[in-house]
Length: 233
Image (tube, rainbow, N blue to C red):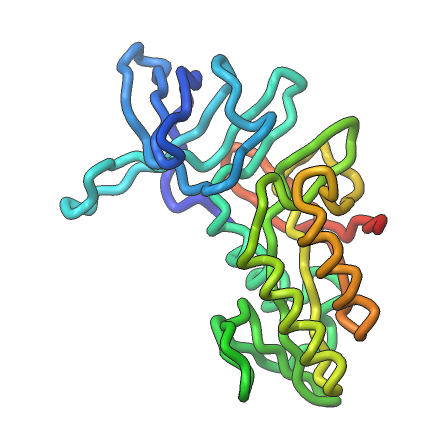
């Protein structure tokens, strides 16, 4: 996923009200950027971190800047924009970046399965049939381990319950952890943050839901899925 325009570099002053971040650009100008991340962003939003902003010329936007990337004091890149996770997985499916998607013949985004009340990120088709996949962006990191979620998620729990029910009925389902953090080499459930979500994941897995994690290469120009990562439950 190539950024359409060069990103602006600056230093993070602070993130506040969930969706706002104040940044000092290299020019010395202080700007407010939209923060497209509803999570706790633990370890991702420390004052003084390098940040990279995209710019929009859309006159209808209140803020022309969007916070896309951070780089921590260990020089690890973090994808701040959670919306990019779905785009990264879509690109990996389309380009068959990993063996996980090698059999996919065509696919759609944001599809509600018959009889379900939740939309899922991807409806995949292979020669053997159909499957549904839900994507979660992972940025919470500790000692090389990635954790999800970084805050309680009732919506995520509901998704897992539905994915488990579909799998139990014979329709393949998949939970995809898209790791937007170059310091992460494996993924785990954050049971210390949301044990109910962790229990829902394990229950769905017992019913047949597949769980995978994808790692990303990240720099100032682009982000792309480049590997699968182990998941420890």
